Length: 318
Image (cartoon, rainbow, N blue to C red; front, side, top):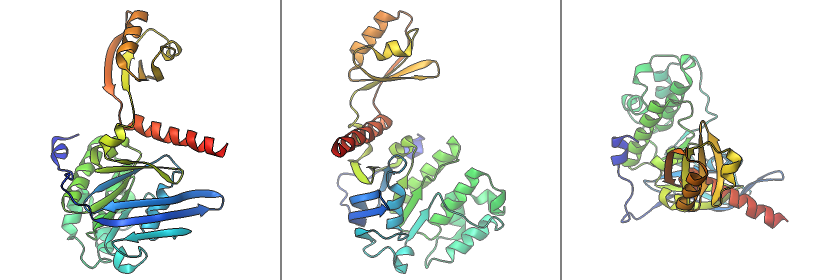
């Protein structure tokens, strides 16, 4: 993480949250498929809430409900104190969706100018171009841009109306590392201006770097909610990384190893306690090298939460 991004403040414990969006007992089915089940959600002013979940968890359905693009089978949704379908609410909301499509022949600046005209108090065009990092491509037709450049244009379209609430659905897909970190800094700048952001992402390091709060969704239900530190605390144990002459199966059989996988020429182990596992590794392999022991991270917590939820759901069906 860049120094500038790391120094950007997050909410403090003295912050008194004000709800800008909520759902109550939200249900949505598509035939026999349950997309959302009795979902209760709060999004607070000035926060970045990261919405995580495996494919099919219900993330897209929830975002569509909050944007007023779909109606629930039962339950209620409120955005900025009103029905999300209402025009005055939509004028204060911006969205960058994966399914976004815009005319290929219009130039970048023309797109920003067009979408800005839909809002009562948009950002100045020059400011939108700067925040989105698209000043240098503003005269190029959209259809001639790379995938990453198109992502930045869609980001600019989402924020050009100066929204109070911004929905970002996988915003950094297709971006290289430098461009991704630049967008992270831009998103945090928006939060610093008092904007509220709902972010969906499959990049768990992105949620860890940006989120004030994380919500994990699985099979239409919330399975965990909290700060990144609180979510990571749900993953018990340590991660051990090493190179070894042992086989992967031999490593997996060591007492205390919860899981093990090969990563290039090294092994990555999830363990309850690192010390006894490391001692056993050294006893079995005197050539053990490149040893690293770290705390379990957000990825391990996410996998533990969703896998446990699948197990519990399976038991309920049986």
